Amino acid sequence: MLPHHMSAKLFIKPPFCEPAEFIPLFHRWIQEQPVRGLLIDVADYRHVHHGPGVILAGFEGDYALDFRDGRVGLRYSRKRRGWRDETGQTDSERLRSRLERVLKHLFQAATALEAEQTLSQPVRFRTDEIELTFLDRLQTPNTRETLQALSDDIVATLASFQPDVAVELRPTSLDERHPFTVSVFLSPAPELRTLS
Image (tube, rainbow, N blue to C red; front, side, top):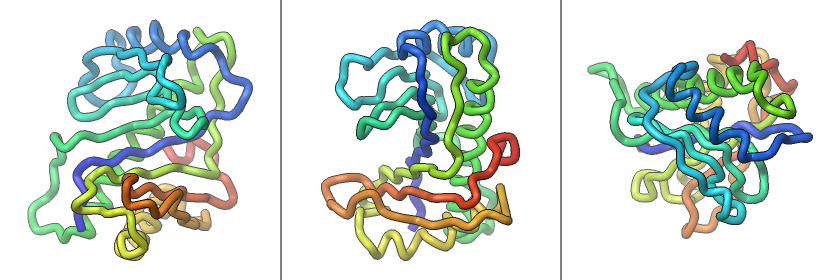
């Protein structure tokens, strides 16, 4: 079971600035490149209720100020292109490597946002919960079997960032119409700088 398209989201603590402030910020990020990946354009979906918000589109992946399920956060979504798997790796090793890259992109972008001086409210992230979504419905159907198949690799990947943190996984829903999504709870909550 090797998913190709996955995303990770960190949640933002209140209070929160106006989402419109992210439009010029993301345009500046295209010019200054403070995060990994080739950045291309900014798309405004703030009009969509509980939608993707403001997207910073990239070649290999997208960053987004995300409002799905009514919870504001920063999401990094990796596209199918750009995986550079090493030859001879097992599917489990490939999955861990891919998931690690997705998380590194997310943590770097979250660290850059917390350092931003241009927003009316400073951005602070919760680090006790990370949402992982696997969008390959054929590879990762939204079932308990998928959770069992991926659990060890997810836990091992998070442990590589912070070995002293306990990791608990909970599926957000087992409705097969939705992509497989799991909430990862970390205890005690690590500092963002130790993750990035």
